[in-house]
Amino acid sequence: MMTSFHIPLHYLRAFINARLSVHFGHASNLITGDAPVLQDGSPFATWIDEVQPGKEEQIGLLLALVPHLQPGFLEDILGEYIPEGSDFIPIGGVKNLYHRGLVPTGETLLFILAGNDTDARIAIQNKLLQGSIFRQGILRIEAVPPGAPAMSGRLLLSEETIIHWLTGNKQRSGLPTGMAERISTGQEWNDLVLNNNTMQQVREITQWLKYASTMQSEWQLKSGNRAGYRALFHGPAGTGKTMAAALLGRNTEREVFRIDLSRVVSRYIDETEKNLNYLFDKAEQKDWVLFFDEADTLLGKKTAIKDAHDRYATVETSYLLQRMEAYKGLIILSSRYKENIDETLLHRLQNILHFPVPAPSERYLLWSRAFPDKIKLAESISLEHISRHHELTGANINSIAFRCCLKLFGDQRLELSEDDLQEAIHLELVKAGKV
Image (cartoon, rainbow, N blue to C red; front, side, top):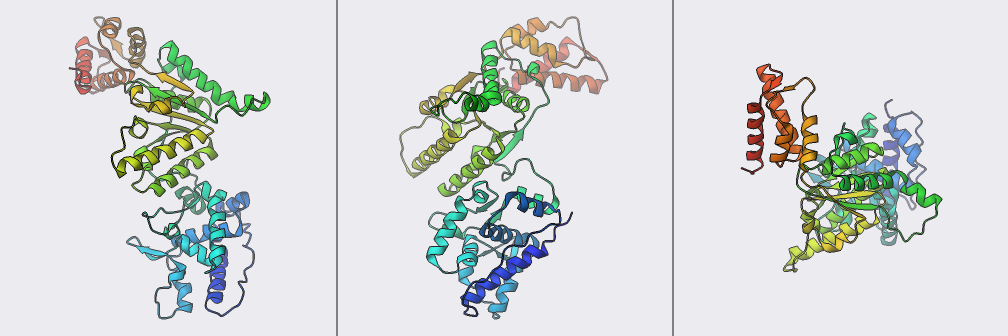
């Protein structure tokens, strides 16, 4: 059902007019009514009814939505008070290459709500930024360069919220594009081939995901236990680290997100902290499993601080560790080498899992499952021999099997010859730099 957006926008226009009337001396008091209650069954109306944002938050939400609906909204209102069209500095706002209208900023919101009353602006700013709408990343102030006023950043709605309000569709992530990638799998635990020790550790994490919260509540465990669960998955590429993380999510009905630290970290410290807050607040709300791939890029061992860049990196790492420590869900750090991870961080982990290159017996199991049932292996092929003589990961074996299947499909054959298999193995070893 379509939203009657003209009703809340009419309310926003009346609120801004009331503020401008006071500012220009046309009225002595700010007179505004309550926000209208929509009952049209639209996604916007339903969301407002469920979330119940306060008046200040509703003004902020509508103000951030306006550029997506009426690009000239603010200019039309200002034109009634400033016919000559000169800039009106108190209301803030910015223009850019992609939008010819005035885009509201945090300063715009503060002026509309508090005018030029410094104390009121500070109080409202603190109230809004500490409220759930901002903490959950539904509404945010764009980060600005160091030294610039913090509230001069654009007032932005999350992409997830905009799409939901305008189309009724719900995105799964709700995170800025590139910051996180949802990972999933259609495979089962039996498809994951690991040594017994590693598999037992994975099962322990499964137990934590399923029962820890209920157990702590029913058995009234003391609060001395740290919040959440943090584990390190280390080992060569292709040994099952990502698959194990995806299976943990699938089997406990949680979404798993691979975090790209290079997109979270900004050259501005304030923006990095805002990105991390946005990420962890959203994850906390949704109870996501967070998978930090190649975690040693930011959480590796530190050398002596030599310059401002090193000091900045230390600040970034410290703040990330604080958020990780406070996260109540599961965090998985992934790295090829345990030795690359800082010792201080290792002591904060509940579990460290090694994903080594599969042993011959495990490689045989992987080989035996690699080909579709309709593919027949030539009698000269010995999977036992291949498993003993070629040290390959599960990802290597799957890649080889796919290459073989592609060749057979193109040749319209169903029997794999030993030459076909050996050629595919050789090409995979060349790709991996092992020959």
